[in-house]
Image (cartoon, rainbow, N blue to C red; front, top):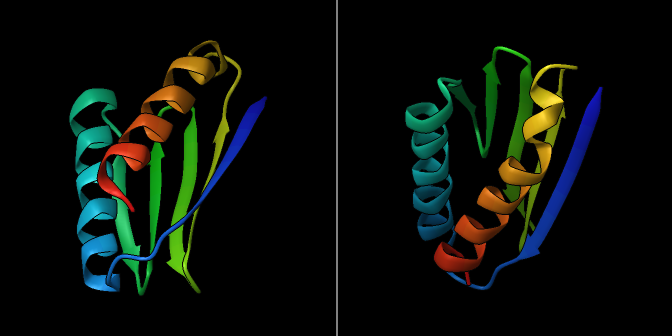
Length: 91
């Protein structure tokens, strides 16, 4: 089982961070067939071999993802995709 965690500080307003987080969740849904569910300021992402959580609080976005054995092959690509999205949409 593979896993990764990405954290990124932010200074933009919280509603803009939530918009960016919603955009990332929707992008992952379209591209990887995962489902997302919001609970307050956290979104849980789940799909075949993927279990993740993204939250934002106290000026920090925190993304944690666990991948099953088959999905772990895509860990570098998925990690890069999430990092690139955050770098582009969150400041």
